[in-house]
Image (cartoon, rainbow, N blue to C red):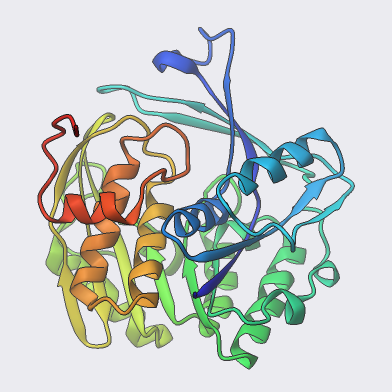
Length: 340
């Protein structure tokens, strides 16, 4: 069985119930989530061995996170504990023309304060087949830039495939800082993931004939983006999820994949959204699963898009679906009829 290691921060997610606004709500629904943890859970649900690496506070919230991850069979043996707090993010789920909103409260978290020396990458990456991180982790501080760099160098030394989701977050760092740091880190990356905006914001590579704000996306434009990314950084594969926003709870969803010199585009789904947070992570997990299981490139892409399509229908960041459910949707079983 393939072993995938992911590295990043996990936070407490406090979401308003029943589409309430922050100013209306008197309670929050509590779950735990983070980009790299989301990928690990998806892969564990698909039957792979998934290890999540982070640092948690040495208190009841740290224990709660550990127990939460373990119910999904995620390997938590490389999680460390120490001083600091658990980061929090608040989610107000949008509806129709009202967009969703996220407020972060993550400063001085145990993970953000962790030092590179605390992570024994030689031990953590032993017998691993794949290492995954996102641009969120180095955005949390220079200490985590170094931690990522240490992990990437060790992964390359061990011949491990490396993937990265650009996951640009304007609330964490500037485009200039992101471009400077990520240009260095992606030199070690084999498979790059991005959404329809990341390549432009981080590397200044824009899709022609596309307008993300208006929901107009050009496949030809994103093929150019993929090829320019590969040409600049030498990636073996580039996968981009494509969201056409109609209103907050109704989107078009698809994706593209550049594998070597071959370019593929997937079927587009019209998705009535329950919860869109974590959809990009489920797309990344789908690509990783397909590649590790020997799927052809076009099948890998279709699997990833179908998996992430289903994620939009599930409350919480984690993609609570099985391989069989994803493959059923790929075969055309998307009517939503009751399964008896």
